Length: 69
Image 1 (cartoon, rainbow, N blue to C red):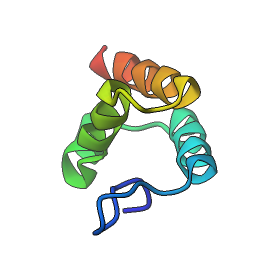
Image 2 (image 1 turned 90 degrees about the horizontal axis):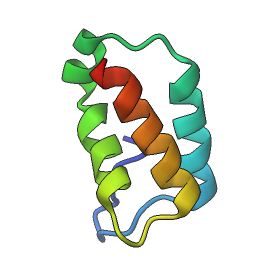
Image 3 (image 1 turned 90 degrees about the vertical axis):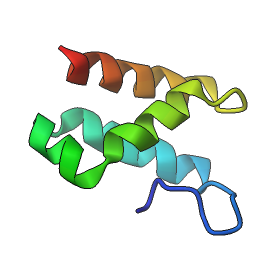
């Protein structure tokens, strides 16, 4: 929920997004976790968003790549 867009369509602060993505990189996430939490959809959104910062996109793409294997 901390990474999802807010009701007014704005995104959480960039330092919150970056910190949470860094934490996700350290966690041993399984496919069942991705399905239950639907975090994969949010991470995919960040990786494809044109106005997203380079760092957030890089971390998002790294997570997707790791989870896809």
